[in-house]
Length: 360
Image (tube, rainbow, N blue to C red; front, side, top):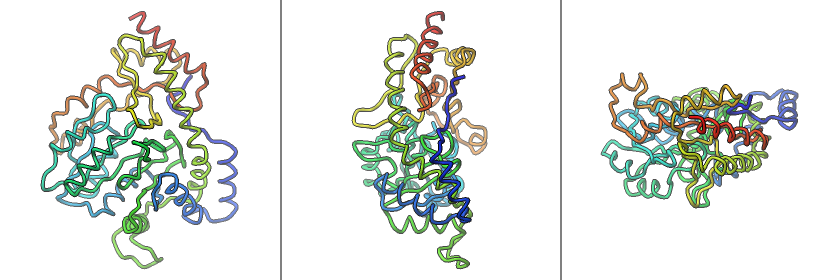
């Protein structure tokens, strides 16, 4: 079976975890600080705050910026539900702007249509490993004096016009096992604002910078040294992992480009796509997925139901008309692109997709 995703863990990660276990310091400690420094340098930010999930990173980033009740945050409806849920956690309201049909990222022109007196922030999602149009989004934010919180949970190492995701506004990354790098579970907030960094670190630790002195309401959302040790080893490999993903993606694009019924993944000029997912538009999407499963090839639909049509959000009264997101949800299919694939694996994926459409 060729899986849709697979984490690559080796001797370096095992040795790093063994070292932490032997030290006796297995909760948040020096490895977390070391990982924060390394990741902030990698993204080009001055600070980072490691936490226990990407969802926690989004939630804390919002709270650190003072987002709360009566505020509105504009974001994408075409993403994993944690993006919007993190806004609800603060008491604020997610407001959905439709996406671009080729990148699947939030459309800056649609953002402008949603801004009102309650709008406090924009949360773009760098979906599938490609940055949203951060030049346009940052210009909008500056014009309207809005906070920008980047959901970079799928975009470790991606760039927009030479600048890494997570460094435009306040970034939030996930290190779930299927991501471009992992800490097993975990997340991190990136920023060049010292106050935001300090608040983030307080919020993750019961509102405390000094033990037993609590200055604000916080949570227990810390990363462990075990996770950070894995993260340090993975960060050293991240650029290599991304290069493998890009190579596999290039093979897929070349092999699929002539197939009628397929729209291959695209990369915007001047951007660095790190292909967390290689996502196509496909006629007869569900039948293609079933066919590939029979041939031993895993696929994924990211995402089959946009957030504004999720049952809970419909109960909240969401009735948005977002036709581009709705159409994408009916057509997108992610194919294996991860760095554990061999060249033969990629060629098999191409061969079987061709076979399906030849016989359709």
